[in-house]
Image 1 (tube, rainbow, N blue to C red):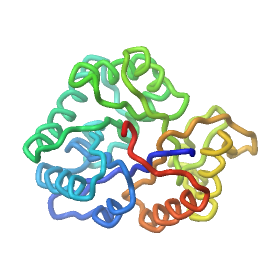
Image 2: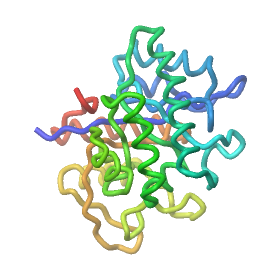
Image 3: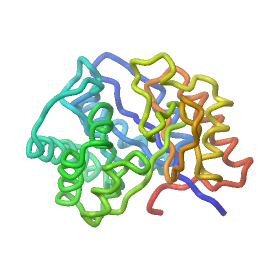
Length: 253
């Protein structure tokens, strides 16, 4: 039987500002990528989200990003590899502490936003992230865009990796995600998204925006928790995966 992980970026509320429907989404997904306070989230939200993930049996992952609350971590920023290494260590460590006091452990790490996209293409950034993850805990699974530099860097460093595909994003012909600045970046129809995901899992292919076919490996599927349609998307995805006899299970289990 085919199997796949279903993940969502969560814990992205901040102070008095609420973002997403985390509690409901955690009833459906198998992995949660929890913001670590740099692009979103704070110490209260981190603690709450870890507790909810534990209660619902969902894999806990750190979701480190650029120090960019105002831009939600989606703006390109320039750091040298050592700085990237240090702020990845810092953010993983913060979430790791909340997991520990709740008698849990981290399962994975997935970079956020612009950092994720840059690490997909830039070998030095990817290697800095992989090195940081390995040094904090070499048992952590590194999530990265399927076929990208982050996956290569993780494998090279000796980490377990999970090749990630996106239910709600369109793809460029080179296998990268379409920038959010473009009108066709997001897939807004749950049925279209579900159809694309089934093809990625069962056939290893996805159609790019120019109509070309891309070979792709789907080990974990992401739905962005900050989108208004996130809950609808993830509910429909789960149903369609089950209808196609695809097991939904946490990476590493």
